[in-house]
Structures are given as structure tokens and as C-alpha cells.
Image 1: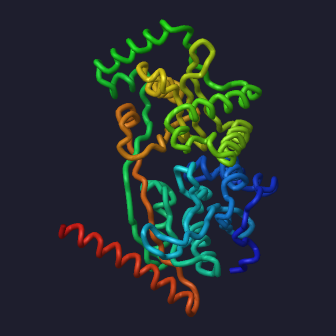
Image 2: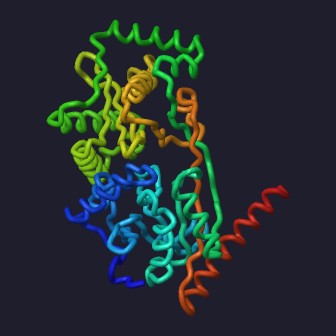
Image 3: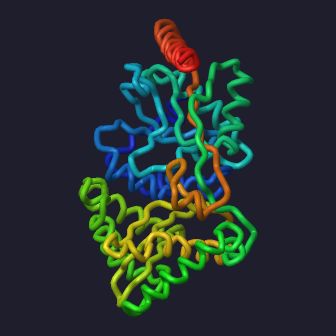
Length: 376
């Protein structure tokens, strides 16, 4: 393989327009949707969040055709183990890690990714993949290629998270998923909220309104517990800049889905989704905690359910929520299995030995921990 024809690209500080266009064409033909690696969000993240992470964007090719894209970095640790490893780059605000691969070229893309990593001097240890759908195109291709190449690989973690995938109307889904007593209580809260003033639910439609909506979201999120703990997007300039840039780019690409509930013209709940392909990813939610007695977070999730189910362009939505999220799990019935993989890397001479030892050591420690846990 001629590595000079498609090297791993160090992409800080900015994405170039030619690269963005190339990635956008690939994303339009993706076998698996991932809004976080689509060029609008990925370029915003590289520009504002990469910092000193040493992020490289690997491009897999079949001749002159771009067939895969995966941002990678090297981590100095693997969980609690002091083992450096290559990993798909998932920054703090990235909730899905499936590489963008061209439909019909899944296995070829993974052969190329792994060959590049095998030959890369900067790739350490093994490949650690996070945020992969166990039933997705990447998972199937990874397993097939590793079996084909007799390459070591292991699934090292999995969990279930809520998603929305149904042919039911929003009303029918709501009635099937939420018990009658709960529905009655929420209707009562909606009526009580309306007694305080004019309540309006809006979906972002006018591009010129986006800057003000971003301001409102950042302020609303920072007003709650995330602001007090310093984890709100508005607490760090780089995070706020990433959010604004991602929203602007996604709106231009037709991928932004932003919803709000206003009380007398003031936002009391907001929700941001990013689309890719037929899917969408629920990115962030914010609500006025001083109005907590009216459950504004639940009310905007109900509004989101109607917005999603009434939009024929959205086939499903990933909640991006933590496992066992009390609110989301009670509203959304479907589940998505998210997994992590550890994949052996090869190489030559001492590099091959070091990588083999790192993979074997991590597997051994994991097996010993399971054994001790079982005995306990």
C-alpha cells in the first residue's frame, strides 16, 4: 500500500473547505449514521475542542474513492491501565463513535483503517473503539475483517441506551408507552403552566434566529446544576464556540433540529438534536429548574416526540443518554446496544512485539478481574 496516497491527517487547528466537501460527499453515502462525525460537527470539534489531543483523521480509500473516515488519537491510558493505545476520538460532547464508512465498502474500509494503523509509527498498543452500535455496519465489518485476518479483537463493554424508532404516530406512541395516570398528571402540569402566561412550543425555522437561540440555550443550561458544577457548555469558551459552530454548520447542511418551549417569550426548556441520514441524535437539553414543579424537561421531551414522529425525514432518534436514565427510559421504549472493542494491531519487529504484549496484557488483566469478581 502506498501510504503517501492517503495518510492519516493531523487536523488541528482547522478543517479546510476541500476536505469538508470530500467528507460531506462521503457522509451522504454512509452505511451508518453518525452526526458527530459528519463534517459539520466533526470540523467544529476539531477547530475548537482538539487542543493538544493530537487528533488525526484517517481516510480509507479504494483507489481514488474515499470510503471511510475516522478521527483518532493516542491515549496514554486504557481505563485504569497505564497502556498507551490508539482510539477513535470522542470528545466530551461526542456520544457516538461509529466511523463514517461508504455503503457497500464496509469491509474494505476497515481493512484499510487497520493496515494504516499497523504501519503507523504513532499508533500505540492496540485500537480501542468506543461508542459503537453492536448491530451497526461498523460492528459487522470489524468482526468480519478480524476473523478474515485472524486478528485478535474483543468486546470489552456494552450497555443499553434508549432510542426512538417506531411507525406509530406521536399520540399513539405516547399512549402505548406512558401509563394513563402519568399522562393525566402531565396534562395537569401543562394547564397549570399555562396559568402563568402564554406558553408556546417552537421549532427553529429561520436561520437568522439561530444566534439568539444559541444564546438562550447556553444561558438556560448555565442557569441550572450544570452551571453550578461547571459542566455547562457556556462555562468554557471553547465548548461554547464548538456549540455555536456546530449549530451554524449543521443548520446550513439541513441537519439541525432545535426545539424550545417559551413562557411569555422566555425560553424555559430547550432541546438540540443533530441529524444524519435517516437518523437523529439528541444532543443536549436545558430547562429552567426554578419551574421544576411543572416538569419542563419532560414537557419538552413530549414536544420532541411529536416533532420527531411528525417529521418523515427522521426515521429514528438516539437518545445519547446514559444507561438507565430515569426520564428518557420511561418515555422511549426502544433500546440501542452500545459497545467498546479492543482490536490488536500488528507491525514489524519490536513494534509488533510491543503491540502484541499490550493487547495480551490488557486482555489478561481483564480476565483476572472477571475471575476475582466472580469469586467475590
